[in-house]
Image (tube, rainbow, N blue to C red; front, top):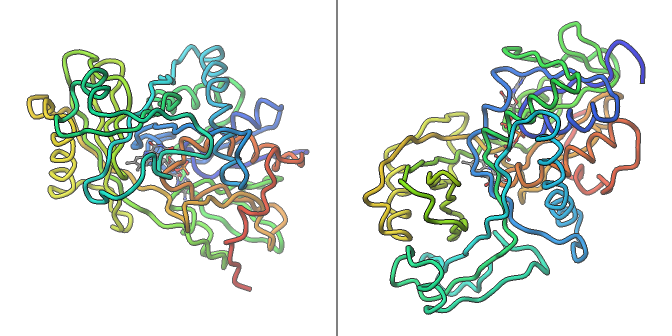
Amino acid sequence: MSNPLDVLILGGGVIGLTTAWYLAGQGARVRILERGEVGRAASWAGAGILPPALEAVALSPMDRLRALSVRLFPELSAELLRETGVPNGYVVCGGIELPDPEHPGLDLPTEEWHSPGVPVEHWGRETIRATAPYLAPDIDRAVYLPSLAQVRNPWHMRALAEGCRRRGVEILEKFDARLVAHRSRVAVEGIDADRVLVAAGAWSAELLAPLGIRLPVRPVRGQMLLYRTPDAWVRPVLLQGKRYLVPRADGRILVGSTEEEAGFDATTTADGLAGLAAFARRVMPALADASLERSWAGLRPGSPAGVPFLGAIPSFDNLHVACGHFRAGIQLSAATGLVMAQHLLGQPPSIALDSFTAYTVIDS
Ligand SMILES: Cc1cc2nc3c(=O)[nH]c(=O)nc-3n(C[C@H](O)[C@H](O)[C@H](O)COP(=O)(O)OP(=O)(O)OC[C@H]3O[C@@H](n4cnc5c(N)ncnc54)[C@H](O)[C@@H]3O)c2cc1C
């Protein structure tokens, strides 16, 4: 590729930053335009749960993307640490999936947290009491996922942003980008680029709409609570239905999350937080005495079936998207960054992108 810029990325969340990191690793010149501060939107707000997945048995493109990402995460985390000195909190902590009282008949593990072929252990009352005595006494069955991992989102975002800068990526913050079309190419207010990548999370559809492109990506609000406990007394992530408790190594315990259609309103609500607190106490009664440190909400980039849009927008020569990762954007970020970098550099992507562009609807 040639001057003036190789790749212009709109959006500095986990998807934009990880793609920039892999691009810059291959010598591309990359500029990120970010409306606020990098790594402060959904990618900051999330829980950082990385459910396990296995490449050997992953058949669908989505399963393969997930499994590739899970394989890449330890290597990406180690490389970020080596190049920046910033740890991202990646740790294989395991996960315990609990029966969901709202769906008592459901077999464990559920698809929400389990991919094909991943090892599990079925636990009965005695194992639960011996291994996780902090769980509520009426919980008498569970499934243990030993290979589930987590990252600390704010740390991972800091490491990625620093890693990108060190690799020469130019990051422009407080830059509210607008796309303009010139014949078959797009640009941003005078900034031309060989390739333009929209990685603006929940705001991606808004950015593309003025070009006549409709992408079914919408904001789905998730609220979170953070408890501070004196010691790191819980290790595995606790999962129940779509909710979870994520213990951090310093004793903090994150509780998530709601799933709400509230437009672009990223504020918390009394009902949402009360529901999370009640869930947390039901699963771990001792949390009734823990101090609440803070709460927040973030906007997931929702998409049909949670399958992201990855690849070229065919009506323009230089426009590409990577968005719509919904509930799994952190988990999918490593593979997304890698395959998008390959695609943008004209290399065959490790996973074919055809099935990730199927939902793109273009108005002519
Ligand atoms: C409460 C919650 C819990 C979650 N838990 C998990 C989890 O445990 N595991 C997991 O894998 N995933 C989880 N997720 C999902 C995950 O966080 C998201 O899928 C992921 O962060 C999306 O990343 P992104 O880069 O696409 O979007 P974002 O992080 O939202 O980044 C998009 C960026 O684009 C910028 N932008 C928007 N418009 C413009 C513009 N016009 N010009 C310039 N910049 C613009 C925004 O300011 C933003 O910084 C969770 C999400 C939430 C909210």
